[in-house]
Amino acid sequence: NVLVIGSTGQIGSELTMKLRGLYNGNIVAGYIPGAEPKGELLESGPSAVVDVTKPEQIGEVVSKYKIDTIYNLAAILSAVAEVKPQLAWTIGMGGLFNVLEVAREKQCAVFTPSSIGSFGDNTPKDKTPQDTVRDPKTMYGVTKVSGELLSNYYNVRFGVDTRSVRFPGLISYVTPPGGGTTDYAVDIYYSAVKGEEFECPIAAGTYMDMMYMPDGLRAAIEIMEADPSKLKHRNSFNIASMSFEPEIIYNKIKEYIPDFKMVYKVDPLRQAIAESWPNSLDDTCAREEWGWKPEYDLDAMTRDMIEKLRQRFGK
Ligand code: VAH
Image (cartoon, rainbow, N blue to C red; front, side, top):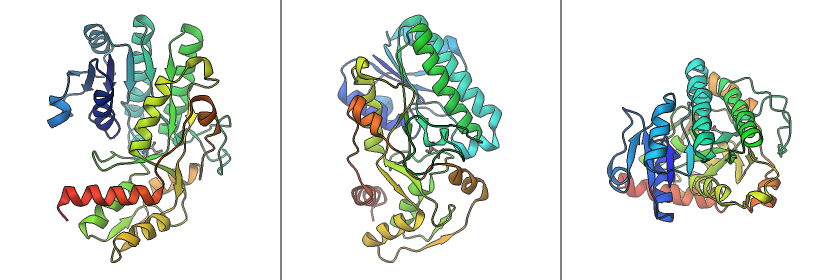
C-alpha cells in the first residue's frame, strides 16, 4: 500500500492516478485542507488529510492503511521558496524529518524528489556529474541537498529504504506547477494553444534540464521497484532527458503553431536561480544502477502537449 503526500500537486496528481492503475493495493491520496482531491483523483481511491508538519497525521494514515511506501511530494518550489524561505524549510525539511521518523518506526520505504536545484554556481554546468559539489545559494537548493543528506543518513543509520531522483523541470498538462523556476516551459504551451503572446520570464540562452511528466512519473516508480542490491547511490540520482533554452522550445512550438509569438519579460529572481543551475546533467549512474532511460524528446513532448491542451481548450 502506498501513501502519496502532496497528491494534488503537479507531480502527485498524476503519480497517484498512475500508481492506482499499476497496483492493486490502497494508493492513499494525502492532501492538506484547501488542496482537496477532486474528480477522478477523489473517486478512484482513498484519501486522507496528511500535513507533513503533523507527524501524528502521517503515523495514523500509515497504520490505518498498512502503508509500506511513502511518496513524499510536499514541497515549496524554488521561486516561492526564495520569497518564503522559512516556510520552505519547515515543509521541505521539517516535513521530511517527520516522514523519515514514521518510516523508521513502521518500516516504510520513502521516495523524496530532489532536483537540479540542488546544484549551485560552482557545480560543473555541462553534463553535471552524479557525485559533485553541491553548494546551492537558494533555500530550495538547501532543502534539496539537506534532504538528500538526511535521507542517506536514515538509510545508513536506521536501514530506512530511502530513494530519490534529481528531477529536471517537469512539464505537464494536467496540474500546473506552482512557483518554480522552470514553470515557463509549461506556461509557454498554454499561451501557444490559447493563441496568446507569451511573455517569457527566462532570458534567451538560459539552458535548463527539462523532462516530460510521463518520463518523470516512470522514473519515480522504476527507482522504487529497482533491486536495492544494485544501487550504489540512493539520494539522489541525476536523471535527464532534454535540455533547452527559451528560443529552442519557442521555435519547436512554432513548427506546430506557426503564428505563435513570444516576447521576453525577464524575472530577475527566477533568472538568477536559473543561471545557478546546470545546463545539462549526466545520468549514467541511473542508467547503470536501475535501467533509467527517457522516452520523450522535445518534439514528442511538444506534439503531445499541444494535442492534449487543444483537447482541453477545445481548440
Ligand atoms: C522548480 N520545477 O522550478 C521545480 C524544479 C528543477 C525545477 O525543482 O523549482
